[in-house]
Amino acid sequence: MQIDTGTAHVEHDPDHPARLTLHVNGVPSSCLDLADPGFLAFEYLQQMAAVIELLPPGPVRALHLGAAGCALPRQVEHVRPDSRQLGIDVDAHLLTLVRQWFDLPRSPRLRLRAEDAGRALAGLPDASFDVVVRDVFDGDRTPDHLVGGEFAEAARRVLRPGGVLLVNCADRPPLRLARQEASSLADAFGTDSARSGRLGLVAEPSVLKGRRYGNVVLAAVRAPDDRATGDTESVDLRDAGLARALRSLPVPARLLTTDDVARFAGLGA
Image (cartoon, rainbow, N blue to C red):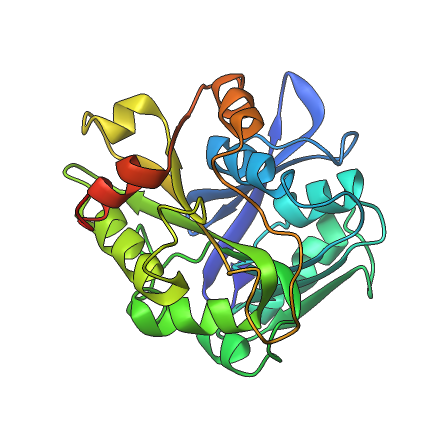
């Protein structure tokens, strides 16, 4: 089916009738199970969900840059009912279709907006979200205006103190893109972010060892003592429970924090 940015079609899983995969321009973009709103098929989304679990219990305000089929917003609503989420995607027709095709939370629990992700981010209020997720691709790369220091600063601005930014970086050996992104996040979120457990990286061991192309999830937490809204509870990526949860996923993942993530980002000891 034609959409604003190309084509989209839905493929049914013959072994799981309720499971659907959305392909955008021939690339698998989202996988949902209409019978299980908590289902996440893609490993990097499972990793992101594990990090979000570190936030205090209850509803969250979440911003999803790159909405596609809204698999993660669906899962967040399932585990944290009455959350308020905003999904941004540049393709207006795609957003109309996914509302028709999939069982998505209705507005105001999940609002969908057709807009360039960078422009949308720039227009959002300070300290307005607990979670910001960047999962935007043009082909196999994230558009240039959604990487680097300017993007990292904009994402930090819209996070409440203690909130977390999650970035999906698809990279290949020697992971130059992921290293550059980690360095940009460290600059934006503070020179002490790695040491204090506010900067982390998650990936499958084979990706970290430079054996293959894959997804790297970067996480950065806005400092809890930021004067925007005062002190608040903060995510600590050094939490032992997070490392265990990531190792226990169907495809185990490794977590880098403190000195390990600092070295990855080229920050020194």
